[in-house]
Image (cartoon, rainbow, N blue to C red; front, side, top):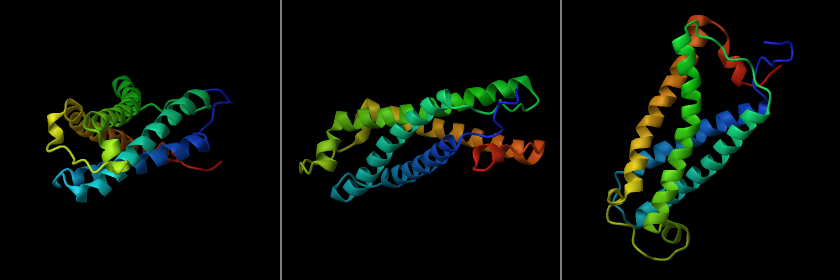
Length: 177
């Protein structure tokens, strides 16, 4: 680490990080809630919210990844174990990948099922009888628990750093001097 290496992430990165957290959480809750609903007109509003959140999340995660490459960032924090250090780096990149894949699989599903015209275009066409008839829904359903596992690993590691290693990791992803 040089004296020019920042000790925390740029405020743009901090904002994008926490925005992705809120967007992914909201999309997950809405998706999980509506998955048990019948595919009728009452599902159009939750679908519209879920799809809108997915599109916004994809845009934000791409911007976040690009800014991560462009803006200065703090040095990697070691967990004191080369394997855990490697896992930490892998999980960060996997989070980007799986959030992106979640959005892409959702968009693919929406195209396969004609959802844009049904949900946003007022076509009046019925929703598909079963979304699981489409390969993209199977992929979307596989990615969700994988993404949840990655989030849990990320959060668990952050708390391990903060509480066990006491390296003030949380301060890196917040605003301040």
